[in-house]
Length: 159
Image 1 (spheres, rainbow, N blue to C red):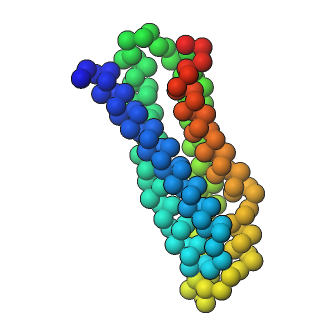
Image 2: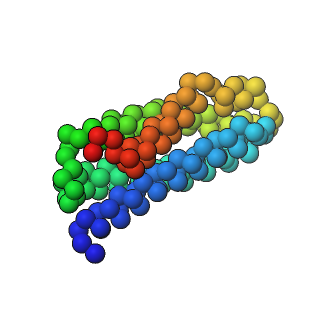
Image 3: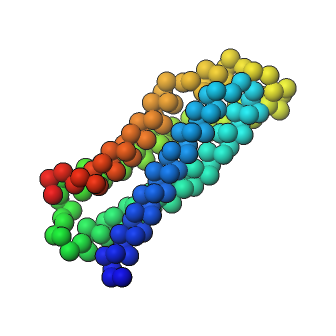
């Protein structure tokens, strides 16, 4: 395998980690929304950390090897191409939204852990925190940006 194939392999591996981690985070968050007991909610939100690790690795691999691929591709791609710029903008947006949403979710997890230690009774405050429209918008907005990156990478508009 040549340089281009290796770069593509690591870039696509990063994309799988990013998308897979994002899907796992959604599944765990939706599962937490369906629970009542704070201990169950805390467990599910703690498991999101594994998804975040996959997302972090995917973020790093996609940007490093993606940028390297642009210069090494035998197809004459350019950093000024619309689809490359769009991917970079969406990558920044996805990361910014995901980071901010993750910070809010961290506080929700900490509340669930505290309530679990204090008797594990269902809580309206925790329920409201889980359904917070700002947190949900940030997290799902990040996921949508990741999906748009994948679409951009597949169709390469303007290439």
